[in-house]
Image 1 (cartoon, one colour):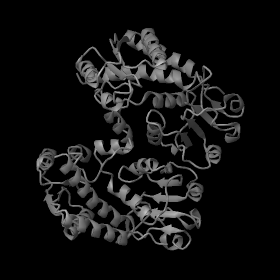
Image 2: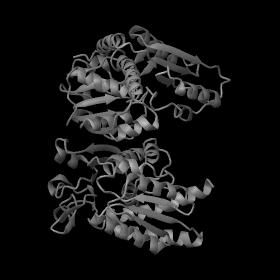
Image 3: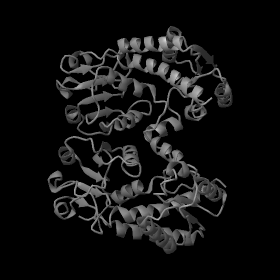
Image 4: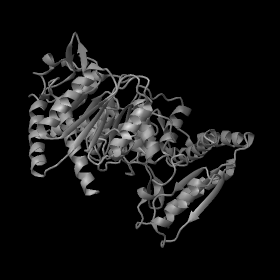
Length: 278
Length: 278
């Protein structure tokens, strides 16, 4: 069965739209773009569309290559103290002469709708309330939408990056899953995949997960993104795996749309907490 | 074969003592004790002995039950700005009317020789330089002392507490182990133990790890501490397991001494970084 992230995304956006209208929420997302990366433009376009659809204001600050870290940080500090700004995203990657971590760490944790600042990661680690990294949250929400349990389940995460694999291992442990975090140095990946109830692959290596690594009860979540001959493909050999397993995400159309939906949800969460705290 | 934490501890202390004498290091550990807990007294005594042995100054600030959070935080702030203080430990547990996390978070990350503040945990998560939690560091150092590799090895950690299991999963992933983090909701623990190259148990449930859960190649690290009829015992059914496996820590006498040695090492690390940064 297909885990239809596109459909679930639309349902979530519809609910957020109703909420925004009913509660007269006036939220604004500010994105800082300091790169010529083509994929970034598409990602920003997707966020813009979602914002427009549900009624969140949207601003992009675009910088040429002459920009300095000081410029970016000054912009972030302005946005931090601007009461009409709800969420701030520094679009990754940024020009190579700039340090992404140093710049992004300036974003107020209350406006960090990407969920990657120290404060939010530490709270995730401590299993406390936080703005959760959007892809992590999107995967959990997608499993919930299809009533796939995680508590007590054996979940194999392949890939330990700081955007998905690593924070996902914290979030799923918090949800009482037994998580194994695999990576390029892991031995016997086939066997580990066959033992897992849920495989979540986030490596960017196409065709890493093949039909001999799954069984009919397996749930397969494909977070990988590789571009091959102009076509986007994931980590999973989708055509051969899809009819063999219980659930699988298409890619594109699975986790990607969920990530966008969760950015919108984080913006509304940030808005509501901001209102509570004056 | 026995992983003799006591012996390795003595070797580490000996080296630190030489270094302190040779480099004329003047470091001071300050411990804040706000509880009547009997075990805490023993732990503090162990730290005092180690400090005295190698030439680190030692101060304890003891509070009666009338103490407030404000008092503790004021004490921490004084110690933070006192240049002669190198390391600060808020001995856990503290009186129940006080919030441990709130108080401990006031400790400067540069003097946080226990390695539990937000800054140090975040850096551990990001695989950056940090003062590492002492028991975590002690386990890694004990494995290193016996030349037991962790890279690419399947390590099962049982227990996801914030003192050992959880930060250990970050540290061992950083060292390229494939980590599975098991806990009370984990199914098929026996089978998972039999699959693991290294089992590290930190639950405080005595006799959780039994002889049917290990094979002759297994390395068993026992971090559990339970008191039964006045006797300290670990998570492992030591008498029956010890002759069946390749390596095992006694308990007491395995990880515990290593933790004390690593506090001393963290103090010297904090001292050296403080000197570098003026």
